[in-house]
Amino acid sequence: MDKIIIQGGRRLEGEIENSGAKNAALPVIAASLLTKGWNSFANIPNLVDIRTIKTLLGSFGVVFAQEGSTLRVNAGDIVSCLAAYDLVRTMRASVLVLGPLVARMGEARVSLPGGCAIGARPVNLHIRALQDMGAEVELQDGYVVAKARRLKGAEIYFDMVTVTGTENIMMAATLAEGTTILKNAAREPEVVNLADILIGMGARIAGVGTDVVRIDGVPSLHPVEGVVIADRIEAGTFMIAAGIVGGDVRIRGCHPGHHDALIAKLRDAGLKIETGEDFVRAVGRGRPRSVDVKTLAYPGFPTDLQAQFMSLMTVAGGLSVITETIFENRFMHVSELMRMGADIVVQGGSAIVKGTPALQGAPVMATDLRASASLILAGLAAEGITELSRVYHLDRGYERIEEKFARLGAAIERVKA
Ligand code: EPZ
Image 1 (cartoon, rainbow, N blue to C red):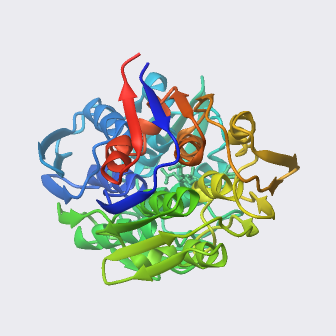
Image 2 (tube, helix red, strand yellow):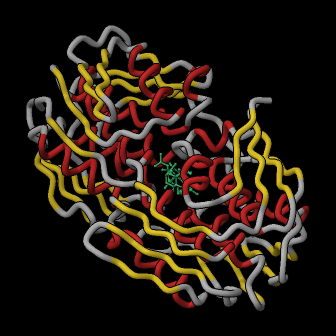
């Protein structure tokens, strides 16, 4: 397994190009199941998870053609509706094929994803919503088995805000008979991106981006040419990097309007943040100030940047309380950061971070995608060498992150183990 080696202390200067968003590309590629013919999606990032969903859809009979970062997808001939455990267990977002398959084919057999490092991550809300739309859904041998001659529009209230739950049911509702209303719907930009592409396919959707979304079912959808939005979590990771080790970093090709919560917190922490039409410039000067953060559904502070922000707070000049409200076990990075000298106490869903003047480089281990990024950030700031193992977690959601940091002046390299 590859490792990433970092010699800390190098200021970051320059600009990077924001890649396409993993969490937008995955539902968009799944949406192609609703159509026959060639869809074309631009700005698809080159990530392990994208290769996984292509393998999964390939097992259904979907065919692909790739031209640079444009992916062409043809789901005209579906020969299987089985999403097997050996694929689904490597990527929870595989559950996104459930809604489109039931809507298009009238059936689906999708393995339950099982838990992951950050939490149990059930899909009960996805299942309940499909049942509300008239699907027969059973759990058999670890699989969700769903059947529906044709889904019927329904009024659905999500007990919790669920991003992929909203996406799954929105896709299913596009071909249902009648109108579906989603209440307490997720408002993430990735949900809006999916809706825009579904509308391009001929779907009738209103209210996306608010917590009430209305979908009027249509008999069929047609292929579309669409563009995937930039990855706000990648961009946020680089903004935080400018703060943790100092520097002047411009992230090009991003959507500044997707970063309100993070930018507010980074400014409170003392960074200078400048925004333009399609870029954000983050300037870190001196030791950051301690800031409290609470993760919330969009437009609140994103849970996917909680670990990265915690790294910043480990070298800040005071006490910071970081509260994780979305997942029950998203502090796996804490013990690794403490091996680097961070002073953190976890109490229930909060981590109390006492800033220390400097971290010490150490061999550390990635446990999940965003924890890996937090350890890279800590390594960039630490004195000495940090060696990050299990970087396969990182490759799921970041496109060549070490190359991007090296271009900004970091002493960072990937070594084949
Ligand atoms: C999406 O996961 C993202 N993944 C996650 O990003 C992100 O952390 C999360 O939303 C929250 O923003 C993709 O979009 C592919 P949820 P998702 O359903 O949809 C509970 C990353 O690092 N819940 O919004 O799986 C759930 O347990 C990943 O890129 C139920 O209880 O998250 C969690 O506590 C990590 N039952 C909360 O809701 C359900 O049926 C929010 O989960 C569904 C969810």
